[in-house]
Length: 304
Ligand SMILES: Nc1nc2c(ncn2[C@@H]2O[C@H](COP(=O)(O)OP(=O)(O)OP(=O)(O)O)[C@@H](O)[C@H]2O)c(=O)[nH]1
Image 1 (cartoon, rainbow, N blue to C red):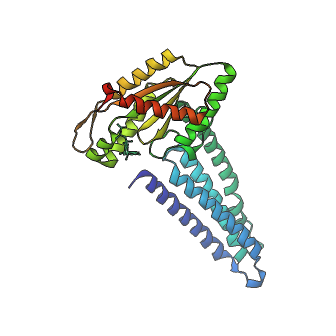
Image 2 (cartoon, rainbow, N blue to C red):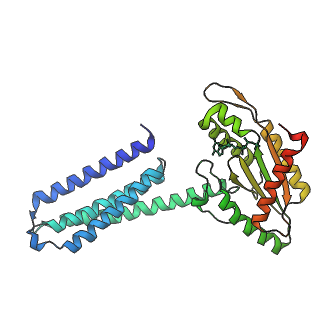
Image 3 (cartoon, protein in one colour):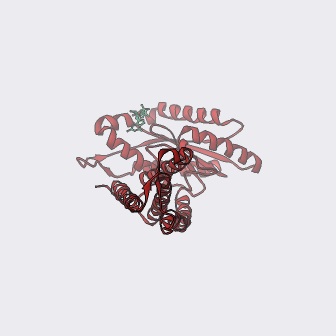
């Protein structure tokens, strides 16, 4: 069983058993209230809170890998769901007024939950700092997961346009050169047909990693479309950008890869072009890059 599926089962069963035991305890000591005494408004609002907390728990367990942060947050949320469930049960069951300990079932888990959640959120914060350091070449000014590519964890075309607008404004203000490099894999259509979509997806992911390795921390890479990546180079001269584009081209050409199934050696090459941002806006700059790629491809020395 996968770790995430195991976690989901483990916490769901644990929580269901805890709630079951809690209900059993209060129903042994208490009596069912007559319908007229039940406050349905309280039942719905408290029930809604339980459903919300279950929703948070489900999102957490579905999205996070196993580990200390997940464990602390999940335990904290389980304690909240347990406490709020007991609160709902309290609306249906009347406990003898001489009993005081049953209130602990509702009130005790809450401070425990808050402590667990606080420690979990603190470690989550530390984890986020570490992840942000690794994401530095994929996000420059902001993170917007909806604009990130699902297959390859870098920004897509919409993210590139937004970042380009910000970079253009910044380079104008600071009077610094802004260079762009486009890397387009050659004959990727053939790779797709020969090795299948799954293998080609994997190759695209690896190529993106390879390009990332060859960039500086202040550069930003996005996937403009299919097999075309664009790199934004802040405060970079044309000569520096040309040198980097040659490095990227050489990196792709020397990419040594064997397919996962039949271990066939895959050879790749890329058409790489460089352009400097001048007076144009983000749309015309991207258009210019695409045109440069087509022109370079049509040159006889690049005919494939
Ligand atoms: N596996 C995979 N293939 C993709 C993805 N996006 C686009 N493609 C494929 O990439 C190929 C791009 O085709 P073209 O634009 O003709 O590029 P090309 O075959 O590299 O041709 P040239 O660029 O002219 O060398 C097509 O076969 C697309 O199906 C993707 O996310 N995954």
